[in-house]
Image (cartoon, rainbow, N blue to C red; front, side):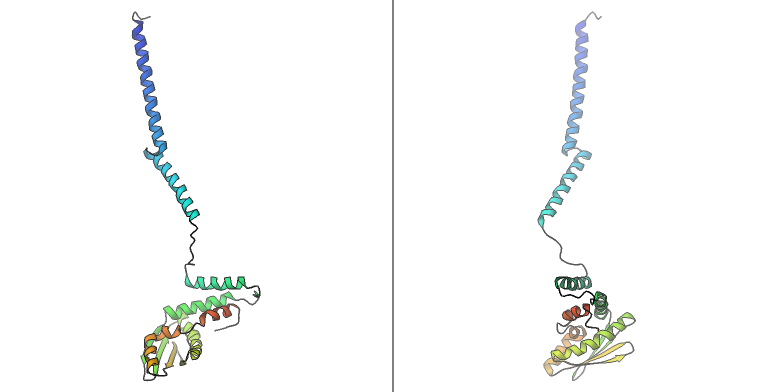
Length: 209
């Protein structure tokens, strides 16, 4: 035993104090990290809290997208919804594939066909041309539309050519001539609202182009 027992006691107290201090420091740092103030644990905690908050906000907002993302897809979706809502729909006669083919034709004529326009004293003459699938779409769509133009007061005719169709539309007066020039090929093709009901008829198998 030491001649100075109080020195032994002081040494033991010093070791004990050092241990308590180290434990306290470690616990404080750990607590801070868990609360989000330390780098790894804090970032994880904040991200988890932020994710829950974001999910909750999106869930309770009630906002849902409405665009189908693609025009032809949207047109087909609309027709299918109309058919679904009609209890008299005879699904044995429905042909959505035919409607899809027509929409492909519309895309080819609208975006890929070349249209060379020439104004005359009596109207407009348009050479609508293309290759492959575009040419075939022109030959299906343009003559069919020329017949529809009569319902809107236009005197239209088509003549087939090797690479497409020549569309001729006569003006009734000077004002009509000015309008034809302003409309051009696609404006003339967009005349009237017959496409929408025709799409429904086509899907029902009753309107081959």
